[in-house]
Image (tube, rainbow, N blue to C red; front, side, top):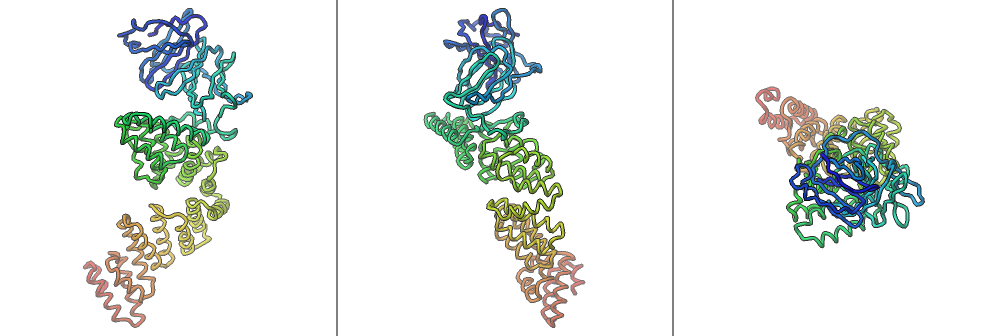
Length: 558
C-alpha cells in the first residue's frame, strides 16, 4: 500500500528509520494536506513538517516496518512494508584522500539535494543526502569521531556531532567533509577495527573521539542536564554517563547513571541506561553492583552478551566461549575502554580454550597496549613453552601489578608441569606473586593452591599457616576454606616437629579431620612422641583423640 507524493521532476528523496519512526525526506517544500489520510490503517498517523527547502514525512511504525519508493511520473510513490529488502549493493563508505581527507559514499548514481533535519530522538542535527532516482541506502551504520553514519533505506544521512560537518553531492558520489580541515575518521590507518565488528549489534552510544572532543561533548551534556527539569533528566544523564565511559571514568559514569535512575522514574526502564550503569560498576571494580548487566529487560544483542561475558570473567566464571563472539566489538570501542577491556577479554579467551580466536584478535589489535600477557598465554596454549616462559618472566619484572601477578603464577605452574621445579619451589614462586596483586576470589584460590603444594612437599605446618591466614583475611570464605584447613592441619600433625605438632593439636583439636585421615595423623604423631620417650604425652594425646573419635575409630586408637 503506497501514497503518491507529487514532488515534481528532479526532486530528491531519502528514506530512513529513527527509533520507532519511518522518515521520508524530500528536497522540495511541498504544500499538500495529509488530512485525507486520517483514519488510514497504515498512513493515518503520518505527520508532515515543511521547511523553506524541504518536506519531512514521519510515520510511527515499529521495526521491521520499512519504506520503499519508486518513481511514478514526476512524483514519488512511497510504500510502507514489512518485507525484507531485496539483496542489492548499498552505498559504500570509503576514505577519500581529498584534500582535505574526508569520507566518500560511493554507489549514488544520481544524488539530489542536501537537507538538514532535527533528530527526533536527540534533537541533534541530521544531514540528509537525497537521490533523484530510486537507489541504494547505507546498510550498516558507522560511528566516527565527528559523525554517526546512519543506516538508511535510500540515500545517506549523518548525525553531526561537530559543527564543522557538511555533506556535498557530487555527480558520482556523496562526500562527508569538515569545514576548515580534515574530517576525523577515527582510528589511524592500519588500526581500524576488523570489518566483522561493524556487523555486531550495539546498545550503548560510546562516542569515539579524541579526549578534547569528548570533554567538550561532556560539557555540553552537563549544561543540558542543568537546564532540564528534574524529572526529565534521565536521558540526558544517560548520554553523559556514556561519554564518561568513553573517557575511561567509570566511577563518575556510575554515579551519573545512578542519579538518572533515582531522579527520573521513566529512566528505570531505559535499556541503555541500565547497561551503562552495570558496565560502569564493573569497570569501577564493583562487580556486585553491576546487576544491570544481567537485567532481563535488556534486549538480546551482541553488546549485551559481551558485557555479560565480561562480568562472568570478572567473577571467575567460564566466559571464553561467550567472549569469542563479542570481543571484536572491543576494537571499535573508544580508546580508554578498549585498552582496559581487551587485554582482560583476550586473557580469558586464551586460558579458557579459545586460544586460536584470541591469537587472531591479538593480530588484529594493532597498536593496542597491554597485550603482552595475552600473547604469552596464547604461546603457552599453543605449546610454545620456552617462548611463553620468557614472556612471563619479562612481564613479571614489569610495572603492571595485575599482569605481573598472573605472569608469576603462570610461570611457576608451567615450570612445575615441565619438571623444572618441585612442589616446594612452585609454592615459593607462587607466594612471591601474592604481593603482586591482592584481594578477592583470586587470592583465596591462590592461597589454596599454595597450601596444596606445601602439603605435597611435606610442609604441612606452612600449609596450615597459609590457609589459616586466608580465613582471617577473608572471613566470608571461612566455611569454604574449612576442608582445606582440616587437610593442612592433618598434614602439619604428621610433618611438623613433635612438640610443635602437639601444641597445634592442643590449640585446634576441632580441626582434626574425621575418618581415616584424622586417625592416621593422630597415630603418627603419637608414635613420634613415643620415639622421643614422651610416652605420657603420647598417651594423653590418644586419650584426647579417643574422646572425640567415632566408635569405629576408637578401637584403633586404643
